[in-house]
Length: 432
Image 1 (cartoon, one colour):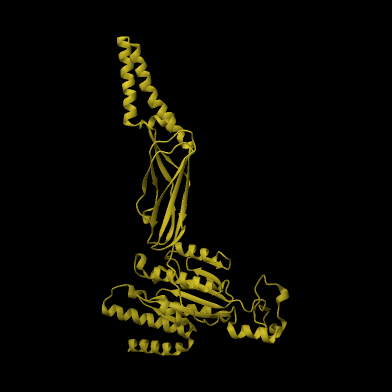
Image 2 (cartoon, helix red, strand yellow; image 1 turned 120 degrees about the vertical axis):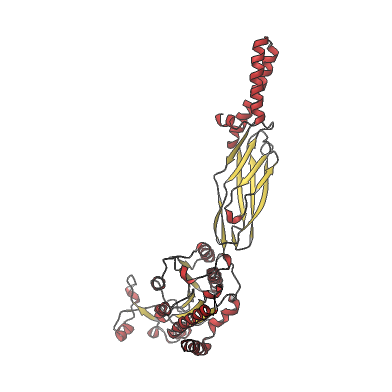
């Protein structure tokens, strides 16, 4: 009741003031009819305050988002359904859904009065050009009585979340090398042809079942080896996303990091659709195993919130990937690298893994003087050459590059020698 009295409008306060004036006049003049008018004038706003004050228990709200996961630049439709659970009609309702700045201004919708046990729905659309996970709500409703004597604001505590995921680009189908875990195509076939004696093996790790020890390989290598032939045809891939802040340039949706995130999402979804058992590792510490049916959603949700990190180093990223590496295919999306950082990435070539690196020349996202541009190009070429010499397949990425056009290069192993020679020439020419 007190809250309702605080919500009295100017009209409601005027009624109370008129009631007080009429009561004083009735006392002075001795007019009982005037006193009745004063009582009527006082009762109306009090009843309105009591009615509006209780209305929070008689309204139900439901919100739905379609879709609740939308790519950058796409729209999502928000539907609000408000239901009057009481026997009395409401007045006109003003609805305001709270939104973060990235989703635009707060929508305000006027809803006509709701009858007893009546429901009504209103809808609006939101759009975000920046990745992230955003809260939609809570809904604020301004309630009034039919006479406009009292007005209160109510907030429903429930909120929903809209996940804005990176743009996923369809990629052309190509046959990738080293797609089978630990050994690649040829060795996986040898398991099926020759049997257990030629089973693919790896070093024993703490926690491995001792029944999987392959004694012939152990005797031959002098180290304890275990079999991994139980899944010889399983295609495994690891997508590695570099989140070093100093490795990327540009701002907003057109930054080099946004290109890398979108590429990581596109490659991950493409490999998942091709039957790969996929793992996503980011420099910020995320390690997602997308082996379940809902793997695409997990990957995209993780990539929706990934951010650049000043503390990330290439050495830590290599160590994080190697903690669970069983070979197979590794696809890295890296910002600008130094020669020393490129040499550290050679550590991912262990266990027979085939490594494909998309190396972004982030300096092309900047407008540089001619001398600075030439120096940046030399640094980029030297790092790419060091990565090639360590056994990686390297695909250069400049500003304006399109992933579908670059993707077939991941399967062109025979072109690696020509690329090495071209890069070596570039580096040598720069040094001269």
